[in-house]
Length: 94
Image (cartoon, rainbow, N blue to C red; front, side):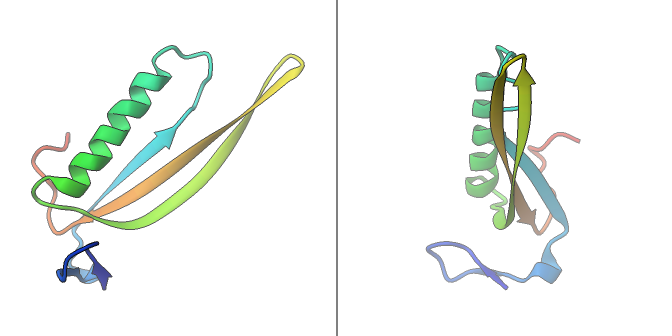
């Protein structure tokens, strides 16, 4: 069972019918829209955790990518949040 933070409501994992995976992180340092994409993903995560139906964070994965540009090496990190719902929210795209 997973408890919602700050409340006494619980979500039994057997009740989860939809899991939304939201990845936040930098993928390509040369992409000018990377910052905008990350902001949109953070907004989506907040919507999933606060809007109705309220989702519950059930998992988190972290990963990284090493990108080489000539002599320079860039390490970018991504975090994938797994948000569980009793039913798929209608506000999420198909």
